[in-house]
Structures are given as C-alpha cells and as structure tokens.
Amino acid sequence: MAGKQLVKISSEGKISGVCAGLADYFGMDVSIVRIIWALAVVFGVGAPILIYIIMAIILPDYDPDSVPYKEYRDDDDERY
Image 1 (cartoon, rainbow, N blue to C red):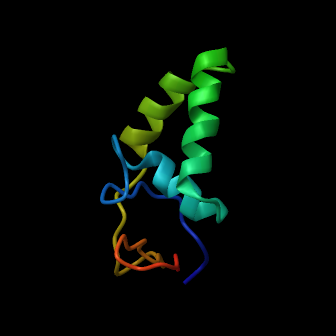
Image 2: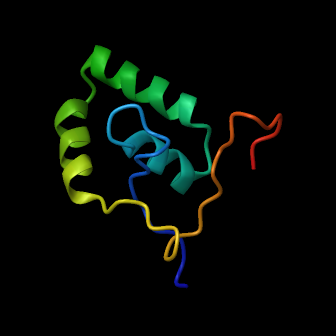
C-alpha cells in the first residue's frame, strides 16, 4: 500500500460522502469538515459548491479492499 488515498465515503456521507472522505484523509472529525465547508459556501470563499460537485464526480468510491478506513459506529462510545 502506497499510502492514503482520497476517496468519497458514501456510507458516512450526508450527500455524496465527499466531506467524510476529506475528514478521513486529513484525520479530522467529519463534523468539523462539514462546518468549514458550510462556512465557505456562506462566505463565498472560492467556488465551494462547484468544487464539491467536481469532487463528487471525480473521487472514487471507498473500496474496503484497497483503502484503509475505520468505520464510525453509532453504537460505540468511542470513535476509532
């Protein structure tokens, strides 16, 4: 395995999984990534909606056989 790969994680996502994939890639909580993205949309920093659409189209879907990823579970008290 060469390293981490940026993917979209549809099972954890609200729309297409782009923020969940970014959160996993950068080691952040997905809620923080969503808040940053929402603030970028509200304040018009760059072209966040266009970037999100492009990333949703371009990024590959998460494949558990090729990408290391630890799933967040709602029934556990701790996140992995």
